[in-house]
Length: 249
Length: 370
Picture 1: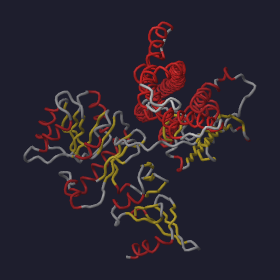
Picture 2: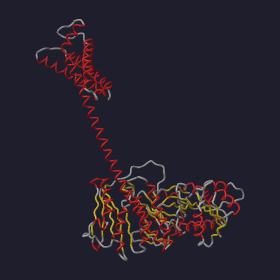
Picture 3: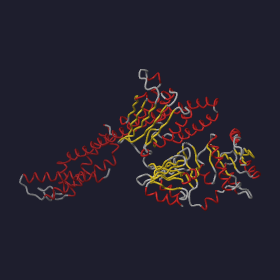
Picture 4: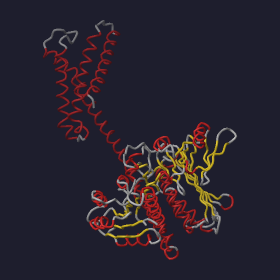
């Protein structure tokens, strides 16, 4: 069960979350709070797995709540999903290891993906506590990206990236159903991704090995990488040996 | 203005006068040292250069605003005074002159030269005076021209802003009406359309007043808009987009595509039951950007007047903004192709954004990674 607390000063906002979460059978709401003080109190007494936290509340802001909770003895900080109408706190939220950032108004799919993220995180780190702290320290590579795409804030786990294509001064990050353009160079992105998970197969493409289904040789020595989603990505000869080494070991 | 300009120009003039006198004396058969001519004329005009510079420094604004009264009461006496003073200094500097009467006392020499040259000097003074007057007129003329040009740009910007503002509420109310209608039939669809509308609003608010935006931002907007339309037309319309990555940073007018795409839906795609097609294609064509939006539907009904079927509203708005931004360097055409397809083609000059030094993260930039 994902034991959840909802903190928002607006009753309709709480109601919406409560109603949408009714469809998530493994989510149990253990508390609802309208002020920051109440939130601190309820979270410390129930020690939930997940906290939906509004940023602007009348007495303190959401970050103050997190600050107060993290200095609390014997309390394992819950996973935090911020819900707010303001996008300017996204980087701060990311920095304090929030699991997601929902811009109001959000539709149920967006909420569902946040909950899924919480489940995944709990599966990795065990039922209690967010394991991100330990994770990031031992890891020299990027595990999550935060950026804005089509009016939404995304805290994208790199595992969700299927492949990355270079388009002039941009890279296109392709996940399951969507793609996002970022003003980045593919070379720069490559250095930040774990080479055990991602492989450069072409001057202008990186693939996530987890999604590689097949590598098909072409007549001229080049090859095509087939992804599980059906995408075909050209692979040039110079990158091919690297792939074969990886695939055969 | 730099005093060196006044002095060097007038000294040059003096040297030319000196040379001319020397040549004409030689022509008459006199053989005299050229140095004294160059020195005396040069010095005389050096003094005049200094005088004109002082006149410019001290009296430029009075010269340029001079009325007949100030001319008579200030500049006329000043011209005589300055001319006499200039002569006095000059005579003091050249005791060996005049050449045919060397060794005369100062006051005698001064009276000779005053008698000979005072009128010339006054004329030189007034030449400088009128030159400055003309310069003043010229400067003010230039300023006027610049101000007028600036005003024109401001006016054009205001018109563009007004035209753009015209689009937002139109689009907003249409979408809200769709949401209102969806609320009765499909609450989840209404919810997700509301989310998409908020995203569009967020993007629009972030852009603020910017009139020309990178194509990449316009793409983001149109992709969201198309996602909303796709939901509304559930499976009836196939969308195909192609944007040349080379043009992602090219500047285009904000809200360039939305009115055209809306038009394509309202007048074409909404009239077909199934298998509607919409394609947007943006590519480079020489030094221009070519934007093409093709939709299937009913074709153009040219016999209908533009105003009654509303075909013109969105397009007219885009057309006027293009004209205000680029003048004659842009074009918008609409034509019917085979199988009742309608194509809107826009050509606009290829421009890129100056690399901005802002540190504020824009949409589409990586904010942070860990």
